[in-house]
Image (cartoon, rainbow, N blue to C red; front, side, top):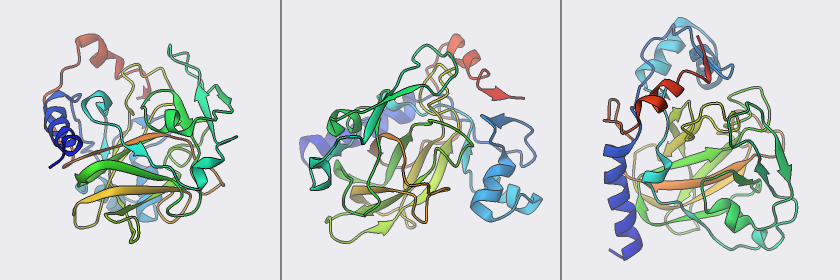
Length: 263
């Protein structure tokens, strides 16, 4: 096991203890909405219709977590240089609201895709539509990957989960990832920051290990395909954060969880 792989494994274990309180949505008739998205919205998008049976499927599969993904607990994946990355102009931007003003304001024109892709912050890029163009390396074998989308407009969650992820161990054979969980509050503790939300975790169908992920805009796993997506970055880890994991957020952060939701 090389040093980077060891870091990934160790960070995964630490994050289980250090992430914010994981609160799986368990009520199929939960009246809340998250920037306009409800349990019924996910039932419609993932199971075909907003019906009691499909809302129950959302709950039974533990698809939704009304909490924050603890990004500092993990190691960001590295974007690999490919032919596609040699022409970065017009493929990225910066979301400017860091105080929680509650808007999607951004500037366009990031030219350094690697800076945008390799840090989980307020800089982002738009992926290719071709498998193998936009590839992340997790530095070792992992079983899950978190995708950090950036929101530039509604409706949600389709304008957040607008990508498909493919997984590989050899950069040749790719399999489509499965969306296993959506962290409805994203990764920013300040929930007034609206460009952050709907961080989602992907796995293989059988939860086998992989080292690389290629992300494309649209595709069969995206909830919409309008020719672009906005991706902050990706992180790899082992397992999926468990419901009820002990959180380390202070009371102020816990209270802040109420701001972005409508009740």
